Figure 1: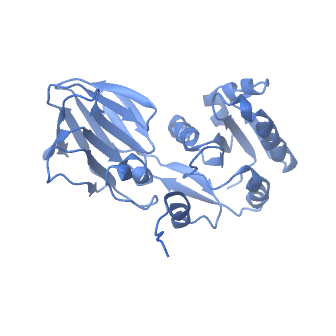
Figure 2: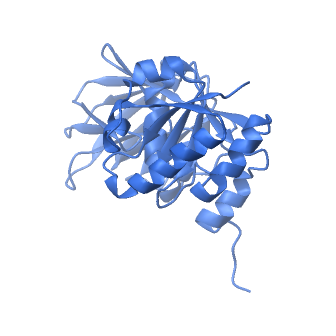
Figure 3: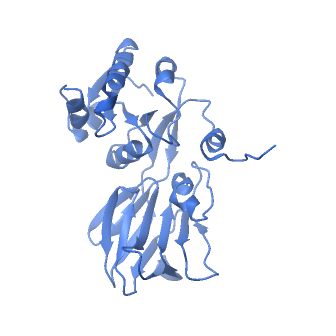
Length: 281
């Protein structure tokens, strides 16, 4: 697969990084890789750009400059285009991105020689009424305020699965297992693995535990309590679920494609970012 034209997106509201953005564009030019700027990103540096849809149609890959949140947002928006994404980390955690600006030039040279890999990450599809949304990390059903509890009935393939009573429930992809899911006691799932993780949030029961389900399952959640429920997709999009309403969550038919170095090691990231396997000597 040849990566000759990059569709470039910058972290929103980040004029403090303009000099870095210009350096990145210059690095692309020096390595004979064409680039097209997304409209909002182009405005950041006073240049012309294309709307996102046209950008995806004319690019071989998307170059996402920012943090994990910027990459997640880009992956969701690019779902219909089946286009690989390369991230350059300017965020705080950088859990999903293994390239920083200092490594960018060297990695572009490897890309020109075909020395890179593309990892495919499972995504989730959420259906509510007649609308469809996609999630890269997780879908959270939670209470709207600090008071009260939510009551949620869950079915799998239209058969009773569970009843959740507490602060809510998290439905996570393997990639998202190290996000909110992990904070609530859920398991770490290898990001290229299969499965959907369902983790209760502060369950009002000693028997509720996280569970890993086959990715082929269709899970439905219905609000059956007095409290309305907030649905949060990847921490970026918020929806409402009223009493008696239902949503359906299943694996999406397409996967997100992330460009990595050939030597990228997930367990090194766990160790560096989350102190995986760390101990006091």
